[in-house]
Length: 182
Figure 1 (cartoon, one colour):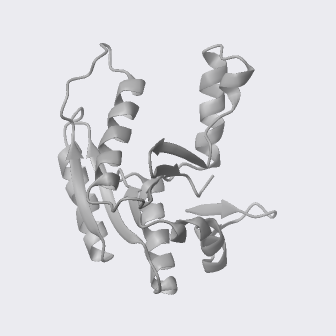
Figure 2 (tube, one colour):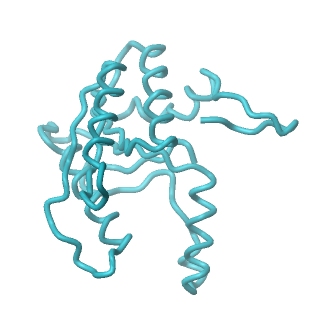
Figure 3 (cartoon, helix red, strand yellow):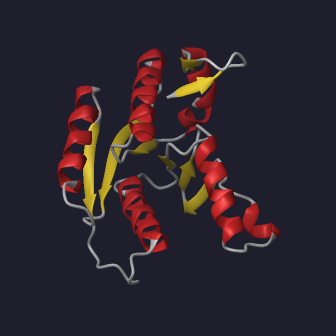
């Protein structure tokens, strides 16, 4: 993941910047990194691996999860590739597959998002102790935020609909979605 500096050069995220971005991750018992295999989520995977190596104390349990919607040829291979990368970094990986047909034809992004959150929440909750807290960590960043606002504006959202994505939101009791790269 690169960020731009004032001179319009790109540079990698420094250890200090990553530590600042991930400061809230330590409050959770379990982190589920949502990694699709795209550049952004793979960057998140590597940033969290580096953060975990530096931290080495009181780390939450970290799992990597890939949701395979089964809608594209080759998606299962991509999910397995994420698994190999996660394992090489020392993380356990789980692939959650599409277990229901799309409810809307033509394909609906809303349906896919709902399925993704449900499956990731299943991973986050599995075996979590009573009173435990889990976070689903996603790689959304400033460009995704801008895209979300523009899409909502194009759909005619009112002022309330233009709030974009939050960096943290409740998903279920004890389960939160975190977007530390926003």
